[in-house]
View 1 (tube, rainbow, N blue to C red):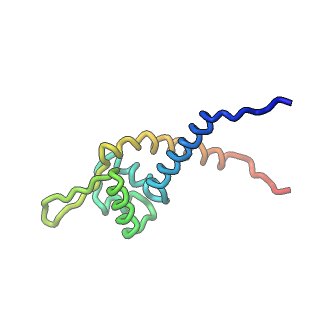
View 2: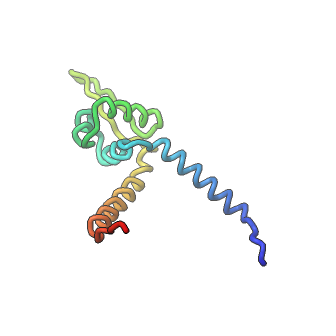
View 3: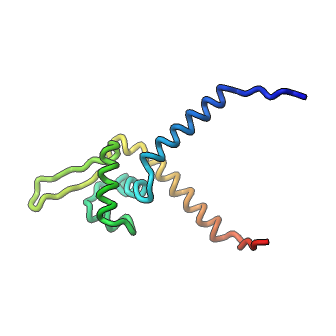
Length: 125
């Protein structure tokens, strides 16, 4: 009987990758952050514009999520010297690194929806 040898390099790589995934999910956790980032990747927006664009989010939750994204250096809050004061949010240079990720997630979501909608119904035995 052949003895299995554990590949410690592969285990270390897997552990490192899982830790990185957990870090990413901690920053992007919740229902709304990726949607907010995806919106801001295309253009800066005012709070009220984001509230309309991110369907279903409350003002309180949007405010909380924007503060968290700002704290993680993904979003920049700009206060413009207008009357009344105008506040806009834009994606930071660092946050722009997530644009490809949001596109990949969106593409996968479209394919997944098609897969589920077009699949025959399964019956329970």
